[in-house]
Amino acid sequence: MNYKIIMKKALLILGIALATISCNKETASAEGAKTAYIDTATLMEKYDKFKDEEEKFKVKSLEMGRPLETKLKNFQYEAQNFQSNAQVKGMAWAQQKGAELQRREQELQMEQNALLRQIQIESDSIRSEIVKSMKDFIKDYGKKNGYDYIYGTGDAATVLYAKENYDITEEILKLLNEEFQASKGKETSKEEPKKEETNK
Image (cartoon, rainbow, N blue to C red; front, side, top):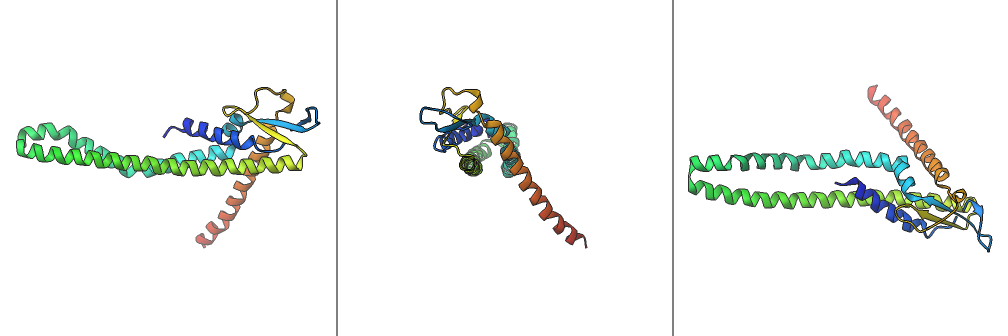
């Protein structure tokens, strides 16, 4: 699974989402609209929740692939020994075993494709959930701080040029990471009493 491709897809989704949200750091434009922009590439790269979920998913996808990996190793071992066994056991055995190995190879290929689809679906679901939570957070931030528009830059650029003083990426990133770390702290404190109970 190529996590760089996954991240690029996530950036594209976030960029499109941000293009529709209201927000900005300083009063700008002829109408006096308050606007700002966020570097979506930086946000996705440095957001702790995204990194945390990516690490968890890497571990999960490896676990999901272990049974298939064992089957593939067994198949490779049999395939490597096929020729030497065929010379000893004869043509009839070789034809039967060859057909069996061909069938198993097709089955393993289908199983591998199904696993990759499952991993992709779960990865897309996690990514979409994170993007949605970021979009909601930025939307609330914009409303609370009186912004009219927010734009996204980065890989999924919707802003071709803006002055640096309109960049609120670091501010949003800091708030998102603080919120995520606080939520992780709450989860840990909920788990600790359960551990104490089991020790009794």
